[in-house]
Length: 228
Image 1 (tube, rainbow, N blue to C red):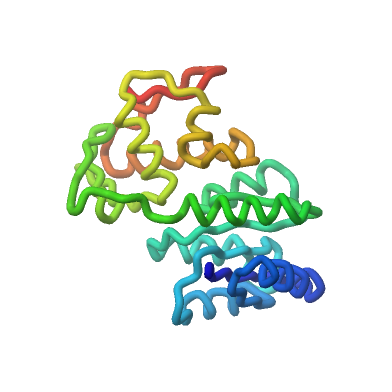
Image 2: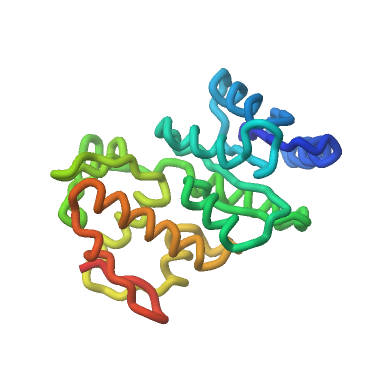
């Protein structure tokens, strides 16, 4: 049984989400604000498989919760839920490390599909014990997803690690956005290519911070990306 934390300040929506997910076989903890969400996440006896975070909550927002969770190095799936539909709001969530973003009002089946897909994507892939992978002038540990270079080291997310593996195994090949979405997020993913573009931007930023060469991840305009 997958363990889900729901943080939503609207009592009716919170109760509806808990009933919906419980009926689908999830173990659900539901809280009303970001502070309680962080307390529940930190104190969980069984780790959560997914955090469903409303963006606008009193006190600490869903953005604040996502930021702290990712700062800890956790790769738990995070899905942002908000009435905000502007692109910049989605970009902020993705930059903070969220895996997906659902705008209210949403369809029940769509939400369930996105939750299931986010959990599947966050499950660790089989990696080489203690192995390393050269990437863009730096080195990636396949054991703990640390990107290390002369400038320091950066923590990669599960999705960033999947992108690294895919690019490294297709060096110099042009990979279309659709191909990257299908291979990394899965064919059932219903989001936009903006999610991919933001993950690439984050990966480039971390490569640069570690002292690597972000230009090794080239944009092929109108098509996708190429790792050289």
